[in-house]
Length: 531
Image (cartoon, rainbow, N blue to C red; front, side):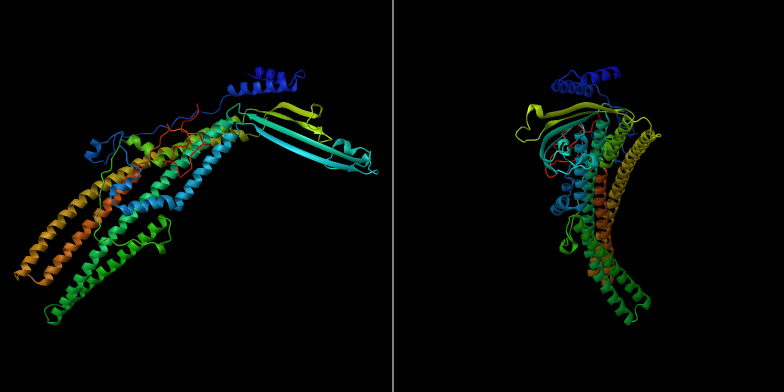
């Protein structure tokens, strides 16, 4: 290959060739070298990871219905059947500043890909200049004086005024013989794809945060109503206890205990109202508005909906978790950087051409006798650098090994969070059923206590005490349902939230769609590494 290369260069530079023939032969040389060029460095292969056959904490029905084609909807929040929640999440996807920052980072990554791709093409520049130079009768070249930018004729001893007009164009092209530029583009694409996945992750994170805070706020709505009812009942019980104490029927200790019970409910109420206000403030920020101008009306009778979350095979988690995809694409980019570093050991070949016209009159500028041109290759190589290039190769390989380890750890963490979410949902389901049974029994006890009051068998204070127990059972059930609904949101987020990486969708980087028109992430870059 070296012999062919030197022969081709010698042929291009042979003085017998005309400018046009010389240009054609150098173009043919460039095309031949580009076609036969290789890309040094290792080709990328996705790192191997250990994938379980099923989720350990999945319920029996979930394991039985695991479907390789099953997936969450991209608008997963609609399964909760709450129009207000849907409105808030859709607003957050448009106005949240964290999403805006992630979108800007993605556009930056695309711009870097475009800039690196431009290095594959020649650089062409052009220029046009005109000068008028005057020389006095006392000027002498022996003094060493000169006029910057003047032509050779203007430095003669002959006095007078002269003109100089020139028009020129130049082109230079660094041939990617060893794949340095292509590896750099490959690395930039990998980084852009990782940023794309991070953008999807930011969208999912904001949507799930809105949902969790919203359900926490609705839980507070129910608790506030139940605590206010408990406060009223405890106030009545305290009044009855004080009246009994005044009649000598109860002790002062019972009065103090009734006061403590009332104050405890008051404290719980204040804490719950604080939680609601803070959840409201958090939702306001997530949807991109100041908390002062944002308010959600209370819904004390809110009914939590628990959707069935489709559970696919664990292997699909690698394509549906944005953090896993981002870590894998980061490793791919690091692998490409090894090729960039190794290409520095090889010489670079640059083809340069410059031509134009120069004359002292503008009328005769663009004429054949006024033409000037130069053309030739430039071969450059580093002979000694003290081991700097070797160190860079070692650095890029270490970064790749680090990114591979990070990818594998991210996969393990992804499986862990899904198992944690399944465990939480499974146990909260059982806990919800237990509290529902407790509430049902307390409703029966309260009905029995009320019937006994009408029969004169128990006192009103006994009925109020039983009512307190019933309200606490309602609160326990409501809180557990809220936690179960929030747990389902967390599980949906851990399963990828309906997003999925698809490396079969390929579109040109330069022709990517605006962010407002994109149907989803990962549709603007080719995920496959060049071979």
